[in-house]
Length: 355
Image 1 (spheres, rainbow, N blue to C red):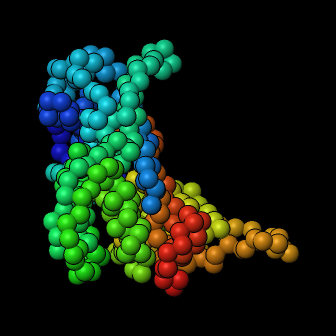
Image 2 (image 1 turned 180 degrees about the vertical axis):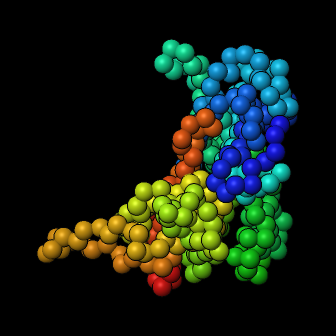
Image 3 (image 1 turned 60 degrees about the horizontal axis):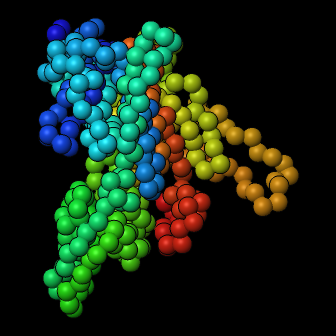
């Protein structure tokens, strides 16, 4: 294995692993610094704020023989059992950003089903279709009794821990939002789907809840926005390859497009920009945004696009990549006012209209 690249945005860093829920063993299917023999795989991963399910599709190429490299070199992938419920983890980024280490995970979730096919006659593929939160929501169950004098936070923690398929929660994040000290006057029995009980706690506290790649999250509508993660601008044709100058990342691909509620744009893959609670924020230099046309006169019942903003809340990210191709992108959907998205979702909760 050769040395890690120190050139920004040159030399991809990635890994793909599958953990069996039957044996507990983890199979490293592909990893690379500069290993040309590593198995090729592609991914298409979508994260959407407040969505019940997230989707990921990972295709592994020519895995019909011994794994050529990594900890599981020599094993036959087709003889390794990959079944529903096995946990797939995809990490992707650039070597210069994570020297000697592994980039952040952009997907951690269970396999729903697998497909084997042959692409263009010569390439065999094993396709992993993954759906996040299915096993935690519609296929989960609990039967337990909570002791008296429990707060909202202790209720949420109890539900998560006592579900048939345990649910991870970000204790520090959830506890900072579920601050009510009101205690149950008596014990409470839970029987049924634990996700319904967690959703009920969120509704009672005027919160939105959703699953990300790792945990159950709740979003405070009074303070829905997190910190500014990145500011993007296009590459200067006379300034060389993509680089980071201070807090600005010169990695825009194409031209950002203004939408009705915000902006859509593509950048070189950035694993730090993900859908989490509170929502990450990004900025795009406004002079590079293609503005949406405004119909005049404005049709009855419609509104013009929101004015361009200095910062946008990230409500959607799509990661696409090919370890031996050109694709290595993050497509980001940002909105300027969270209230707009809540209205589209039909959420009647009270939120801060200034956000």
